[in-house]
Amino acid sequence: MQAASRESYQAAREQLGSATITVADEILAFAGLLAREPRLRRALSDPSRSSSERAELARGLLSGKVSDGALEPIGTLASGRWSAASELLEGAERLGVDALLSSAEQSGDLAEVEDELFRFGQIVSGDPKLAAILGDSTVDTGRRTTVARELLEGKAKPVTVKLAELAVRGFGGRGFANGLTRLVELAAERREAEIAYVTVAEPLSEAEEERLAATLTRRYGKQISIKVMVEPGVLGGMSVRIGSDLYDGTVARRLATVRTALVAR
Image (tube, rainbow, N blue to C red):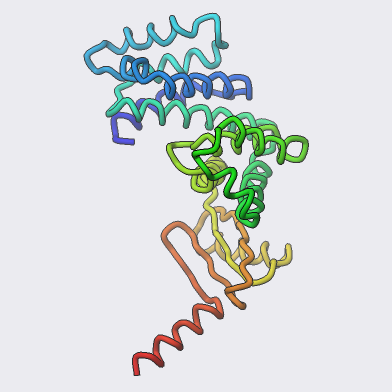
C-alpha cells in the first residue's frame, strides 16, 4: 500500500478493538463484496466524493446486516483516502485478518494458530496432488475451499481454518502458498515475533529448537519463532532465513562451494 492507503487502513484498524470471529467474518464478507463489485470498490475509493459521503454509502449498504463491531471500522475504512481502488480491497482483507488474529489473541490461541497454519502449508507442499488442487486457480474456488476446510476442521483452531480458506481464495492477490506464508508472518507480527525459517535434513528435537530460538532471540533482540522445514536433500547442517538474512551452513551448500572452486581452477 502507498502512504495514504496505509494511513486509512491503520485508522480503521484502531477502530477494530477486541474483535470476535463474527466481526471478522462480516469484514471479510465486505471484502468479498468489494472483490465482486468493481463499481462499488471505485465508488468507495473515489477521491471526488467526500469522506463522509463514502462512509455513509458503506454504512447505508451494510446497516442492519452486520454488527456495530464491524460497521464502525468498515465506515472508517470507506472514509479514508485510497491511492487505488485495489488498495481499498487489500485494506478490507487485511482488516478482516486483523479481526481473526485479534480473536485468537484474546483466547490465547495466537501462537497455536501460527504453528497450525505453517504445518498445514508443510503438509500441502509435501503432497503434490494436494498442492496442485489447492494451488490451481483454474479449479473452482468453492471446491478448493471445501478441501481445505475438510482437512482442518476438527483438527485445528477455528481461526486457523478460516485463515487457510482465505489463503485458498488468494489473500492479497497471492497464490495459495504465498498467501498462507504471509498469514503465518502476520500472526507472528501480532505476537511481536519474527519468523526464522530453518531448513534441515532431519527434524530437530524440541530442546534443539528451544536453544536455536534462544540464540537467535539474543542476536536479534526480539522474539524469534522457529519454523522447521525438513529437506533430506540438504544432506546435513542447517540453513536459517530471517527476513533478508540467510545463514546457509548446510552440507549441500558446502559441497556446491567446493564444486564451484574445482571448476574454476
